[in-house]
Length: 95
Image (cartoon, rainbow, N blue to C red; front, side):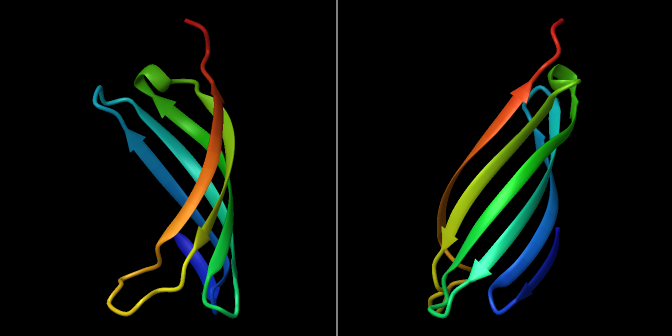
């Protein structure tokens, strides 16, 4: 992950590999914009692109979006709590 965050606002890019029990994988690139507020909360908007699949996901294509809200970090917490939702839409080639 690469992040550029100043006072709760900025952007990040990350690559995630999801590995399933059968060894198949899906690799997703996620780009997030984080917007901080004066109260210490923040909101995030993320776009995703499936860039590769292996095993049963060979040839997968897809995109997704999500939004999240993060709450101010409280004393003793390692990071913020948050809530969000998103959609990932994909297609697989026919066999």
